[in-house]
Length: 233
Image (cartoon, rainbow, N blue to C red; front, side, top):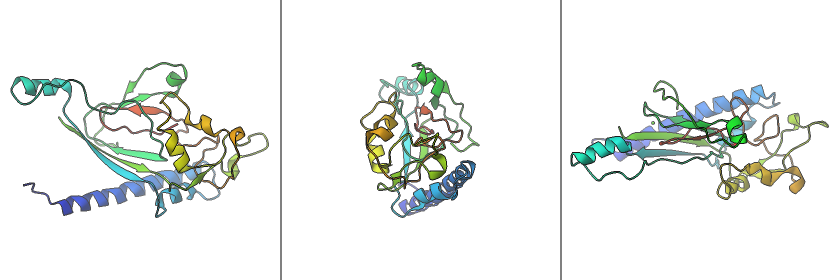
């Protein structure tokens, strides 16, 4: 029998979710200030709404092929046939906060390489002291707005010489596109302003009118043998 009760694990996870939600809110408030929004808390309110679509995911990954092969040779289990992990992808949420240990595997596909059609993935050395969870355990919190939240360019970012690039759409509409397009496709191509109009009442935007906001305002894709940390395009 495990020494830790289900109730105690539930409490630990709940405490962690609350702490990482506060971290996400702090980051989004800073982004709101950096973008010069009249209300810097606009982004934060999307993930603090009672019906927000945020979630936490805890993933367990077996040891690498090399380690597992050694166990197999010593009679410890079946021989591995392939590494287990997530392939290339992007997260559609506002923000992804990943906690990891010292197991490596995270890789990034930089914007310039992706635009040039190159498939060069840059390894990210693990840093146990940083906020990024040999079997691997990873814990990732996806901060997301309610499914009905409408997304469009902020009034502060629209001007005569800088019109809206994309029409308004809901988080549910955008989320559905992630299941229909490949990583190399720009999901926002489906929402160009000329492809149907909508109001400007949403909140999830950047100064360039793009959907997702990254810390350096540059979207990128990421993958790892465990869960990734990244901001989606």
